[in-house]
Amino acid sequence: MSETEEARGDRIAKWLSRAGVASRRDAEKMVESGQVTLNGKKVTHPATFVTADDVVQVKNKVVDQPDRTRVWRYHKPEGLVTTHKDPEGRATVFDKLKHQLPRVISVGRLDLTSEGLLLLTNDGGLARTLELPATGWLRRYRVRVFGVPNAAALKALADGVTVEGVKYGSIDAAVDATKGDNTWLTVSLKEGRNREIRRVMDHLGLAVSRLIRVAYGPFQLGTLERGGIEEIPSRVLREQLPAGAGAPPMPERHR
Figure 1 (cartoon, one colour):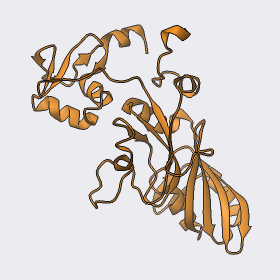
Figure 2 (cartoon, rainbow, N blue to C red; figure 1 turned 180 degrees about the vertical axis):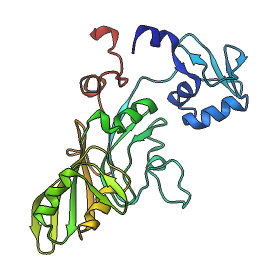
Figure 3 (tube, rainbow, N blue to C red; figure 1 turned 90 degrees about the vertical axis):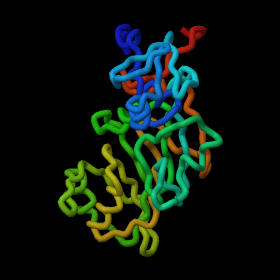
Figure 4 (cartoon, one colour; figure 1 turned 120 degrees about the vertical axis):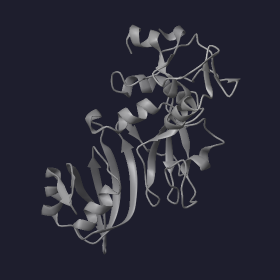
């Protein structure tokens, strides 16, 4: 962040989201309904910026300054959906973790029956940046399928594939092991659309019976136990996050 951007601060909705008050969209609704004040004056426009010296109130209660950018590794088990509100009433990742973490959002998603590494952060802007294919981060999965894949068909996925009118980008897929009618694959991709691996494998005549994300960019699932949560140290974030992605500042004593 440049000195000019730092001096200007964050837009009010982003600031409220980072402070854990609400999602950015809900924060914008709070502004529209006149619930937010800045230094004693009602905020009337979403393009209002907040700095560290400002006092923000929501419904007449002072909101604490947002925490530094933080990221956690979570070993998501199957049976949880990655959403804050599920219309079907299913258990969610965020309900499961609400007593362990501040308000966080996920970097990408894993569907109900998928498991493995899910990155969680208190910084919505960072989450959106890390989800972009342009960031260049690979998502790597171990995938168990029913059937024996055609080697040529797997190799061709590197050139992309269109399934039911949806064009998917390059996918690297390799066979790890075959036992009976089941095959384990390692699958890597940069975009990760909704249910992409399942749809592409189904297109190849292979039914996915297990899908485990083992890496997202430089961050690995490793030996993190199922359901386990572990914060990534600030030093590691500064080393691994793309330039300008909002890595936490280095503490004064370490500069």
